[in-house]
Length: 454
Image (tube, rainbow, N blue to C red; front, side, top):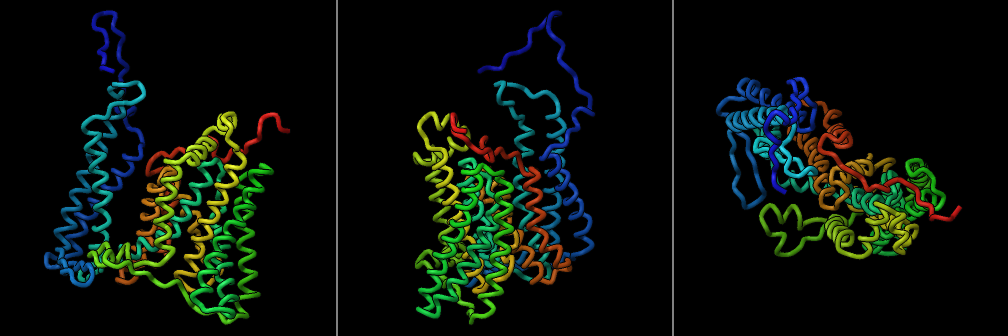
């Protein structure tokens, strides 16, 4: 469709004019632009007072790779100018876009060159802020970048699994805030199974049976959620809340009555080093020297993407989540589809619970999942209900958690309580929609009743 010019002459309609007040609209890009302007000003003003030209930050990347010496003041100054100028360009683009856009297609407003430059610059600044914070934190010291990345991806594992569990449920139209309870149940029942089976068989076998029990216990909680929200059409938020509360009570009881009286060891799943691939510099240590559930997360990530977008089952699932009545008229069993997808989500959530007790700590503590199920839902929203987008959100949360741990290790003078808040603050930002508008499946959270059935 070509752009049409308005008719000229005395009969031409007058174009509406906008004052500067009408152009001052609060947008997401505008908020980020303001934050980058403030951060840039802070870097340009505070950095010369805090660091001398001789101050350096050492970045190491593991054995066999050279140490990189970064001049702290020079790097922060350059980054500060990029933050400041990028923020100003973003503010200018937000101000100009407050007017009427040039329309090529009525459904797709044409972005100006300034809009594209501002968007690209904001993305670059968003990536640049990560090494900037690391270099500032490790000034006059050194930090291992490979270890930082390894910890970030490892901490992202349960969040990514929780997000995948949410995707399976919500793509079929069932809201599942019970992922936290399913994960906690899996962590507890899996460790209880390990302590029982370890007395009857070798520990290596018992721990794998514990993982199986963890997965099945998450599935059992999912069946309860499906029974309440699909069969009885209970409010799905209420059903999920009930399961979360039930999980806290059951796991606390089992820990007090079973685990306190047992000789529970601290056995965990052993790391599996993939030959050849693990020898790749940096990437090998980060991705190919992990533990079984860590690898399972990547497998489930690919399987979920393929099934949802390249198979008949995925097409039917998405149809049920968008318009269950239309899907029903096409012969799709909506109720069965939702039951199966909720069950799959629960099994994945149970596996995420096993990560806490059987792969990481070798123990079980009350509420040891620490809200990671809810953060997984935030990652799902961040990724707009797509597997790889949700994994990117999980990496963001994992990095924020790892960053707090690194700050404590480097002795950065920030209260540890504040650092522990960082993942939850980012969760609030994501849920508030600051990173972009995410639209859930249309039938998400809407109980379905077959037409003609009372």
